Length: 523
Ligand code: AMP
Image (cartoon, rainbow, N blue to C red):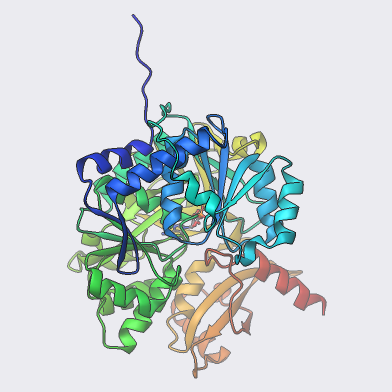
């Protein structure tokens, strides 16, 4: 008997909502409605028709988006899937050379850019990209050519097999060249359903606010909110402005957003400075980097119970563990503080273990590498068999993160394994030292790294950013450390800096700090 092949195209999420709830507002810029689901669905089908027809793209071809957050982002993502193509979102803040690498590596056929005034796409940059990918077509979304795409004959959504590639997600590359994480329709659908089951509920009266780059995690929140027919809001500034976000939340109500820890800190500072409490915000999902205990407690005190944490990585997007709203609020629990300092429990579509170097599962409380398997784990790295084999083996995704599980299944992250400091044979987890230093009222941000040492192999040093008009003398920082952690974990030196080097997603570049230590040592 012939078995029908399963089909699963993410574009169906939008086609379904456009049919069932045609009049609901879909896209907004600020508080201004740009279009309904019915209009969005029609535009997506027409643009998809143009991609396959007029632009002649074949199923599986890569289409890159080099755009800041804008309403066209969503229609293009869905049009690409509707047409059976693969989306390659690229952070609009990357250097032209980094963009050239991604275009060439992904063998992209078509690139959408913001427009003529876009600094990222200068004539010199577009020339460089055309040289890197000889038959590359470039379309600006503020151009007449783009407007004409939406006048094309509509296409019916293409069939996609569950494992067909949907999103080539280039890693943020805190070290080395970015790698193209291959995410399938199945991966992204599992991620979406798992969010609704394990992280937060969503409904049509919600607004999802794109305050972080849509080319990264924030864009992935679109699936959940398309599925329930909610509103998608691009702030007028196109990015993260704490005052604008708080004002938008007050007028739109039921606003949810993804925010990296630095963004949460800025929102909390802004709200606290104006006596606000985050009125109108439904959920802030934070993650993507360590959120220190002191910051979570302050955020809960100022904003109330609106926080949810996710631990994920491009290789298992948004979906490894989550710390729910209920766990944030459960102050009566005897391990409430430990839980707040954790990243929560495994999502229901994945299994998570902590393993030793041989891949054997460790006991509760033991530290090891975090391994993940399940529906959201990537297919591999695009055209990079070596990196794929190093990361996906023995049936597990090797995250490169170090942590431990407690007996209730709560996972506590220590650090990326490459950031662990080995001093005199002992492992020192920078995050533990950072948590202590952040308790000093004068410290705004801190990053701890290892510096080569003839005597110890490596020794601990801290880069400290002080709050405006405050100071944090090293003697006081030392005393804080001596009060709460072993003497050998105390930084040997403190460097006071105006800011920490970060990548375009706000992640601290520890490799850059290690390099700075070496430079300082040589001078
Ligand atoms: P990316 O693939 O760029 O999203 O980076 C993923 C990495 O960010 C993970 O492997 C972790 O090291 C870190 N990360 C993600 N979520 C969290 C979190 N909630 N807490 C601490 N670190 C996180």
